[in-house]
Image 1 (cartoon, helix red, strand yellow):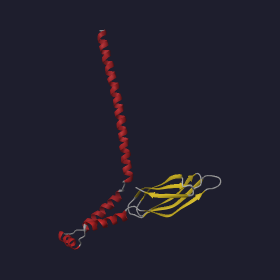
Image 2 (cartoon, rainbow, N blue to C red; image 1 turned 120 degrees about the vertical axis):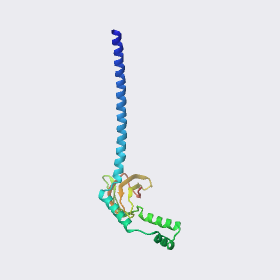
Image 3 (cartoon, rainbow, N blue to C red; image 1 turned 60 degrees about the vertical axis):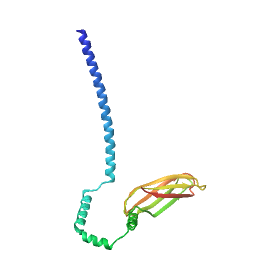
Image 4 (spheres, rainbow, N blue to C red; image 1 turned 180 degrees about the horizontal axis):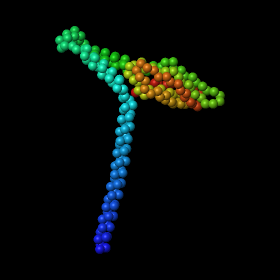
Length: 196
């Protein structure tokens, strides 16, 4: 009788250990999948934030496309007639396409960009930078930054600073108005406006 209790007790303990191991494995799997789902959600949300169009924007684009297709029918003979009188080399087409792409590309221009240096006897030194950056292209300029370097009279860099402006749509501008704190005397500065 006691031998059956020992065997029964051993089976219960063994099953208990197996249950604990399976429970730990289940918790690990849930934690792993939760991490994977959170990463996928972040990727999705990032995509949606940069590729969102309203239904009305989509419908307007579809409407314009349908109108274009409906109003631009040409027969093969019309095409052949046109092609026979309008021949250009591939390099000519490529050159024109490059010019078009160049005009569409995001191109940034400064508008009334001012640099006011303030170095009072008492208090912190700073430069007040203000004005606007205009995108003359039709494409969006992504991640626009102005990388600033301030130099002392010996030419040593006393401050490196990035003014982050974000994205600038084509044919629009973004105002900027910021103060850059620094130590010492700023004799000169340089900057570069960049985008991706």
